Image 1: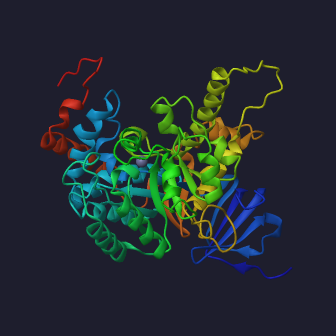
Image 2: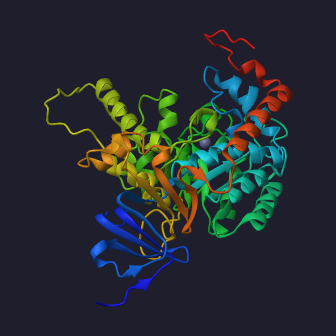
Length: 482
Ligand SMILES: [Zn+2]
């Protein structure tokens, strides 16, 4: 018998690789050495041994999940959007409460959603930060990212439109670029990358927006923009004199290309999906938030069928509530199907049900969006998103032995996705670079109770300081007794 090679860690179980052929090794292994995947395959082909063996017959082994869109600082006002109008939330508490966050407060605000992500198996997240009233607010978010161990592509958004952005949050291009350079040189490491962007077309002077994009192109980075953004509907025609769509504008100024990722991307004009496809841009779908906001015509199919790279994102905790990418996987499917049904109902040619229909999408596709496709959407597919030799060992290890909703085994992935993922207690390990960051549902270095206590206290302070308390329970049906 040939001598086995040794590796730092050997994981055994049902390996859902998400490699190009989507191999699932029902009795498989992953060998890890120096933070990288050394080998992966069926256990009978494993020529590795290790002093550190994890998993076993009852375990599922997946690549860490990838969240392609959020605003972590909104942790300080989690869920407060419920029962408020758009104006109330934007100008009543979004900007005031996040604007009141200096470095230390931003750290506290962003840690709960970061913990949500990690504890549920997300190992890579994007973040879009645009509240720079305190210039070091973004540093607080990145310190929380760094302490937590999560991988992060941070976009520092420069905003300055006088109508769309409150005073104090506005920055000129030079200042925005200089700060982006500062943040980049302070925080970039093997796990954190920093880029420049803006919220949306109507949030930044047009010529400056193009300059921001040029910076990303020159620095070989991604430009991350909401399109269409909320204010686009209001200002694109009236203030920009542009009668077309947001994507048509991005193309018109020459920046709709492979280094652009757009968030939401719903309610497009005819032909815009094809334009995105032709230009090679990516889309950050945010289906859970779209559903919460009542979008009846969600459509990801038009992108996926024209080979647009799409990932799944959650958006800010003010509306994205529990920061759970498993929910987004399920929402992608339910939102698409409800959207399809809506379009059928609205069309003149309502088709009669014949019994032959297969609903669009399936759980495997949702899992692709949350792993390898998300990695592609963030231009990180060379290093994360699947379990393949040479990639970083970002791994999710699930013990299904006590998971009543993951048995029987026949529809394993459907049950995982439609069942809103594993229970937190069944997530035995979340690994990043081969290091265990979360073990048995607990972060290894961060005290969960302290995170909650700090977050509760911060919100109380911010509510008093900014006068935002009036928006809490504004339309409550309950009687609250102090
Ligand atoms: Zn967003």
